Amino acid sequence: MRIDLHLHSTASDGCLSPSALVCAARTGGLHVIALTDHDTAAGVEEGSDAGVGSIHVIPGIEVSTTHDCGDVHVLGYFIDPKHERIRAYMRDAEERRRERMRTMLGKLDEMGVNVPWEDVLAAAGPSARVIGRPHLARALIVRGYAQTHAEAFDRYIGDHGPAYMPVDLVTPREAIELIHDAGGIAVWAHPRFESFKRDLSRFVEWGLDGVECYRPRCDPSESLHLESETRRIGLLTTGGSDWHGSWHGKLGAFSVTEEEGGAFLERGGI
Ligand code: AMP
Ligand code: MN
Ligand code: MN
Ligand code: MN
Picture (cartoon, helix red, strand yellow):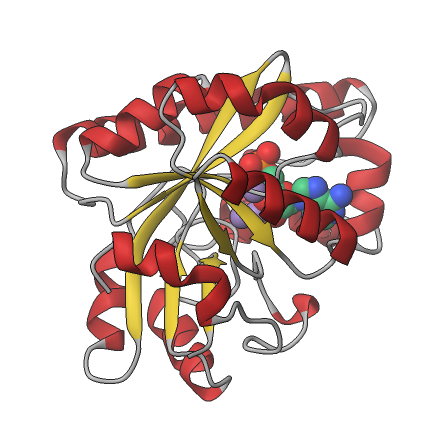
């Protein structure tokens, strides 16, 4: 069984619609996938429908949280996308991300970099429920302020860039509670090594269920360390490609094995 538990669609900052993503995953030889858009589950229904009879699509969300002034992403799996608290969170995230983007555009404007709001909306496309930095990166390229996404992030909007603003929605603790309330399993996405060592015990106290241990672009020794620590404390191991589009390679080139993700799938009733 080939598994990928971390994928983005056009509902957030991915390049394929949920149904096209499911189709590409099937072509890429995957058997179980999870749709985990940033701060929205708006694509889940379309993705699940597209998978019926051919591929298992786990409903998910990637919640943007702030912890000690840094970004921490918490994946919520097997959530009910229609749960009242999830819907309220999605509405709030949509609004707050728009405000944040307007602030970032203001910062760019002060630097003489003029990107109209409409350009960001056009870059995001009609299906995007949340506006994120990759949409702004596309608009910066269209306006000729950068040649590539990497350059847009390096020069302007990366975590240490002059126009960066944090999303600042909820804390990891609130994200874990939200995910549990909606019937889901909370997993720490792509933990940074230093933060993992420092913060894991606190997140476990707050109810964290698992850790994303297997990723492409992750040092194998780091994956092994994450796996052994996660299993030692009795949490679930998961993994995924965090695929957003073809620049991340071919969907299905990376996958998690049953040995690596089986306990997680079992907990979710698969
Ligand atoms: P946001 O949630 O709006 O802060 O945007 C974060 C997203 O931007 C991530 O999920 C990635 O898709 C993308 N991203 C972050 N850093 C970089 C980078 N250095 N280069 C390209 N894309 C990035
Ligand atoms: Mn993203
Ligand atoms: Mn993330
Ligand atoms: Mn992601």
